[in-house]
Image (cartoon, rainbow, N blue to C red; front, side, top):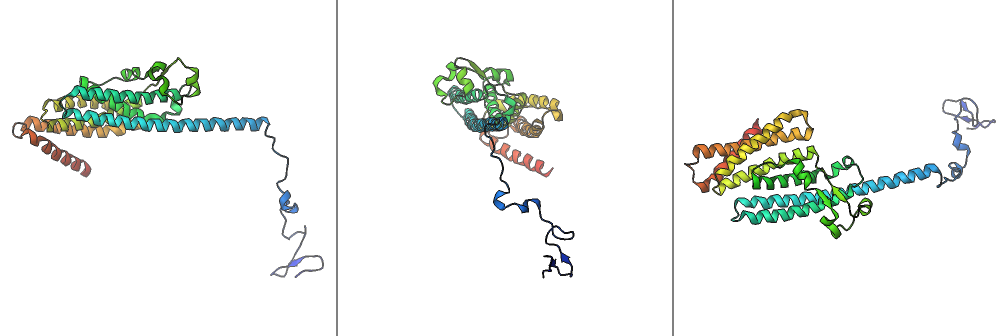
Length: 305
């Protein structure tokens, strides 16, 4: 109900002012303007220094994101090819000619290095640590494959310096195969590229190597090879001692791998114990079955504890 002055009667019997009187509903400031004129103002000058700076920021962030995605894809390819090399090397325990498999594995690793060469070109002129998360998985798998091949050849552990020496590339190494080089790579048409494996990547790759050595040990026993388990056991014990010195003072990922390394060492030592104590009692063709049962028992005990 309205009064003479334009006020409105509410439910309590009080008059509310329709305009600016005290006690009435107050209008918001922008209510005095038409809806289509509220946000009307001066047009943004696209040539202003602020807009130009933000456009350059946008282009830089887009280029960095695209580079990160390309590195992730390359890292995935490196991981897949390295795994295939490891699977190939496992056939050595049952293959009649070891040299043929080693030669084939070297060809596969050369293909992996060509992928790493593309990574080095992408990272040319960039801070590697800004993109390290995109490539760390592939580098760890490559370290695992190279160290596995090196152990089969020499029964020793390859050093990080030896791995990094293999990751120095020149234009003659890849030449025309690189179809999408970065702008820095075009500027360095006759230059040299290198990619360094970080200590953390090296340690994590070596930790994963212990699992492959444990599998090689069990497979070799099944094929009647009695010497390999003892060689692997001694090697794994040295690696475990080295990781024990790091302990919890190193990176978090390294400390997590220590438990898996300890499991692999326990399985290999159990196989060596069975060979030493009961090797003469068990026929060679049944040794693998005995070790598989022992391994399952160890896994169950660790799960219970």
